Image 1 (cartoon, helix red, strand yellow):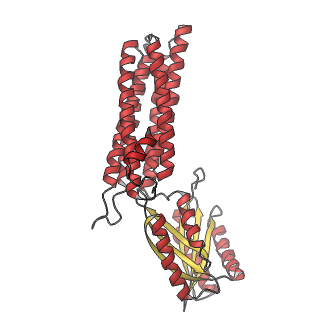
Image 2 (spheres, rainbow, N blue to C red):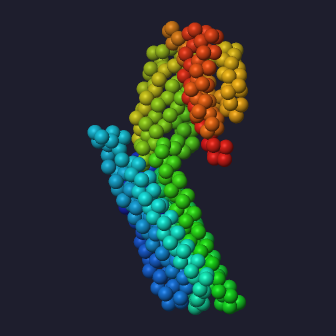
Image 3 (cartoon, one colour):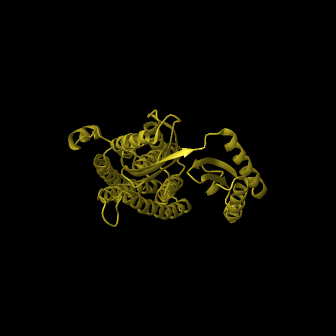
Length: 392
């Protein structure tokens, strides 16, 4: 169904690098999600009230919160489609993330409220009625959620939407929760043991976990999380495809949502490449990136120190300083950019939170050691806090 709607309602639907097409995909998928979740809510609330099953009612409320999340995503995509202006030159794409945060917060709060009701049901259990109608509604719900998971996952990766990825994972959680409710009713029907309240609590926990996970993910994006590695790989592939370029350094990609990026980098030419050739290559790279992404690109041409003996000597000095101040830190990047009168030594140091308090001392000692080695060396130190239990 989704594929049919996409091919008939979205212009240039194959051009998924276009922000307008991305928005159309997201808007259509969100609309379908709202309709399906509202229908599931109506059916489950009705069946839950008739059968007296709190877990089915809880699952129905969960579907209503999902519809609210889809509505928030829909509004977020609509707001995100507003173009750039004087005060927001890079567009309003991050509205998608902001609305995602609000919907995730609501889901989290609803989950806590439902968990409280579930505990009451465990203390004061009531037997739920089992019928073919209940069975049919739950089985249909599982298949609907499976369908929602599959299409949201497929198109989330196609257009690079974090909101749709979250929706896909939420659909998978809902599918698991509804399956648990189905088994609880079958179990009660054949054993007489009432576990409805426990299943309702399980569903509530699914809602709370899903809401919290969505909150943390959207906060990460709003704080400036790096774009997907696929974007980095595509940019690097385009740049390195030019034979005049030997390496790409200091590649920074700012994600402003809906596929809008601001890209900056420093390129290093091969030994044979002349400055005039590199200027021409820069123009070509900027054009190629504009075709692949909706982006603004700034490229700096650099002449890097390529003598490995010199680089290793500087790295050895820096590592000795780090070892004395904080042995848990390490050099994650070091390169030397040469200019007419000076050489800038760019050093990125990765370490634990404690390193923040030692940053000034570490930077001062390294700069002093570099100056003692060569008065033309100027140290530019960057600190990156590494969380040991988090993937980087």
